[in-house]
Structure formats: structure tokens, C-alpha cells
Image (tube, rainbow, N blue to C red; front, side, top):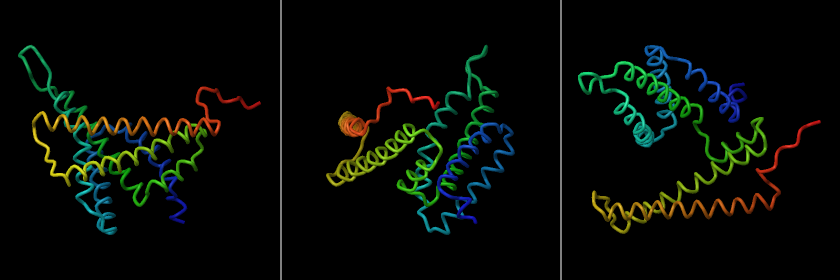
Length: 211
């Protein structure tokens, strides 16, 4: 019974609906309570599954680079007396931060034990237009490939003794790395476009109306 309720495609629907619910919550104490509950549940699952906590902590910190920038830009304003704190901006960015944390924790909990293949199958099971489904499938597929390529490049650079520093050489190497990823993305996109056209997939055509 529980497996039927938490089928992969149903989990995606739960996330979609839960996102709308979270976006309507503005009461900070309530958001704090739900965040604590979600992350305690996530921690319990990770301990039971014997997952590496460091991986999730690293992703969480990278995710909050965006929220850190929001705190820097929205927590102050220029008033009559110069630069001063912005209470309305602090309240707004706090609500946004709590919502983002809640959605992130909820996604981690609901997508637990779902790899790329299961996720693709779940998307294909959703009642979505075929063209939109194809776009989702291609996006997930090639984001995963680019992630693997980026990891391979990073391992190769470390094996050659590369150590990032704050200098022009590091900036040059990073720009080359980004350029390589962009070129690889362009090649994969062209290959995907050729394959889709060979199968008669054309986004420029409007879907025929059902009579």
C-alpha cells in the first residue's frame, strides 16, 4: 500500500503540489517548525540508509550561495542617514530562505533512492504532452552527462597537480574548462536535434486540435 502511494511519478506530483503550498506560507515560526521536522526526517533516512552526510552538507552549502547573495543585497538600504538596515527586506529574505530550505529538504526526502533512470521513467508516466516529456528527458540526460564530464575533468586536473589559486593562470584554466563544457554541450545538442528530426520531432509544428 505504501509503495503504491509513493510511486516515483506520484512523488513528482507531491513535490509540485507541495511547492504551491509552501509558496503560500509566510508565517516564520510555522516555517521554522516544518523545516526542523523535514530535516530531522531527512537525517533519519540518511542514517538508516548509511548515506554520506558530507555530500548533502556540501550540496546544501553550494545551494546557499544564492541565499547569501540575497542576504547581502536585501538586508540593507540607502536612507536619509546613509546605509541602514532594511527590516522589510530582512523579513522577506528570511521567508524566502526558509521556503527554499523547506523545498530543498522536501525534494531530498521525496526523491530518496531515485536515480536518473527511475526519474526519467517517472516523468514519462506523468500526464504531460509528449514534446514536453521529451524535453525533460533530454534535459535530465544531458545534465547528468555534463556532470560526469565535469567530474572527469576535475579528477584529471588534480592528477596533473593542478591547485587553484587566486591568479591569472587559474582564471585561464577555469575559462578553458568552461569552454570545453560549452563545446561538449553544443555537440550533444546538435546530435540530439539530428536524432529528434530523424524521428519526426519538430517543435515548430503546432499540435493538431482534437476534433
